[in-house]
Image (cartoon, rainbow, N blue to C red; front, side):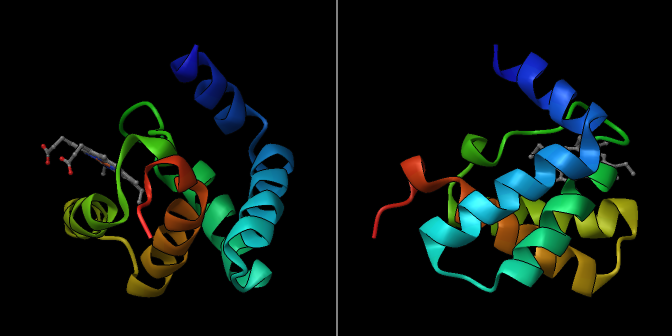
Length: 98
Ligand code: HEC
């Protein structure tokens, strides 16, 4: 079950998010350090007020909108949100049309 999986990811924070970041970096050929920061911030931040949302729940465009919404809503620093968005976009491959 997806929700359970992401609650577990949140509970295991660094280890699970680190593995996800490395996988995402390999798939998307992105800067692994940024994705690692993004994965950690996602696990630490994005489940604070609600269940953590799977990267696969939204498309790249939807993440842009939603992350901006959350940045304003939760008053998150811009650089942190940019890292999180990079991680989310690199991890939602099933929904990305390119
Ligand atoms: C300060 C609390 C808080 C934090 C931290 C937070 N959210 Fe939210 N989030 C909300 C609330 C409240 C809603 C419901 C919509 C609203 O009332 O603005 C929401 C809604 C959402 C939605 C539904 C779509 C939307 O945009 O409304 C998504 C997706 C989402 N959050 C993702 C995230 C992600 C990703 C992060 C980390 C960057 C995050 N949230 C961090 C409070 C938070």
